[in-house]
Length: 327
Image 1: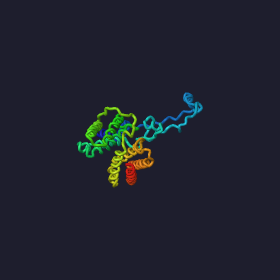
Image 2: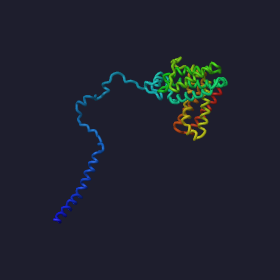
Image 3: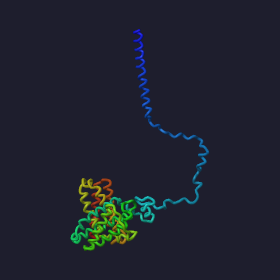
Image 4: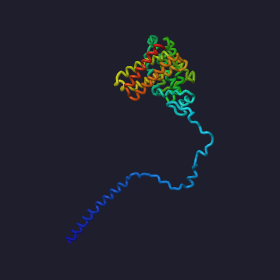
């Protein structure tokens, strides 16, 4: 009896050792099946010949069904840089004016310039004595630059902050800039009020007024002298910011900002009705400044220091020559 029992135990053990690998394989298959790989979907090959429900839906030669002359697509106006059909830039191109502000500056640069110039007003209007002692000249430059940026925003071919109220702001700050030709109690009070207005706008308040003109008249917005003062500021800053490769890398955003502002101001300086806008030599100077600003902008975007210094040199030379002849 003992022998029989021992043989039975051995048999059971042998069967267990045989079945265990099979059970493990089955369990592994179950786990794998729980997380199957997604099947690769393939299109069924077409069954030829085509059914008549398919073939009757197409023309054998679509051109035989067309009527009239073929349109001349080459005669259609092309949208300017940055402009898609239906945008102000495309409308300008269709009207024969292919210029697009977005081709030379970003909306962020315009907004940042307004904020920078607004902060520059604080010292000039700190006291009536500071204003009358020369601060009024600084206010003239700052307000004119602010008005110019709002003028560009009003015409910008893209979404920019303050766009709906830009025309009204343009006219309001332009007036303050023109009135700051002299330091008086009246112009001081106006400068203080306009400085409060721009700070309120920066903080989120709306400017509750209507523009004097719906369409921009640049001779009513900016004068050449304060715009050239802003260009001189850019010229000095760019010389310092590109004095070394390390400075160029560290201040690339500031250099890009100044390059785009120079491009904007040189464009405005050539607008009709501004001083000497129809003078061929003057326009050559402005064109060279614009080209140098564009080259500097491209050099910054591509992180090319040598090209940036060359562009800054061109810009300084053209600025110095223009300022000497047309101050």
